[in-house]
Length: 273
Image (cartoon, rainbow, N blue to C red; front, top):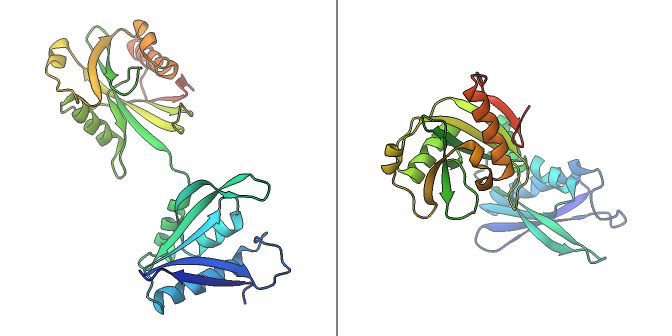
């Protein structure tokens, strides 16, 4: 038995839009702690849509704050695909977000792989950044003067999906500086809080070994990203760095120069913990 009537409207292109209503109109709108009944109704409607109506894709849009509906869709094998910001207007004039869920006829929804695929779409994902610390024999640090922002930063960048952090660092150095660099050990792991328009992220700093002025002369800089590279003493780098980057690099270079950085440094917001 189910307390809901679920309908699927098709666009004629093998895509359907899923909607539901309560069978008992006396019950207030919203699930209010009854996700299992809706889950069963959604699953039955989806199976009918795929098997009898030969749909390839079924979509459902729900309010972001409707936790029971979100749970029911996930349990029915629907994956979270995106968020429409502030598109729902409440009766009091306040705006709310809407979430987009969808399921394909080829999606695996049963067993460990199916469960993991569904939950992978809904659980938080954190941006991962891999940078490389290259130093001159006298201890100066190689920093990139970038085209798109005012502060300097280490070579490196955002790690791509299905790419290891080390391979991401190697790729970014190749793209930015035009060199093949086999990075060394992991010097530090730092958590970065929200900054400007960026969400929080984790950053890994790899040892890039020694670099000389002669090496730099042979670099082929990526013109759309890197204006120039410079070797700068960390004590003089503060005006060129964000406060977080300066804290982080100061801690790494100080500990490493003193022989105290014998294992990966764990940091939060540029501060060793």
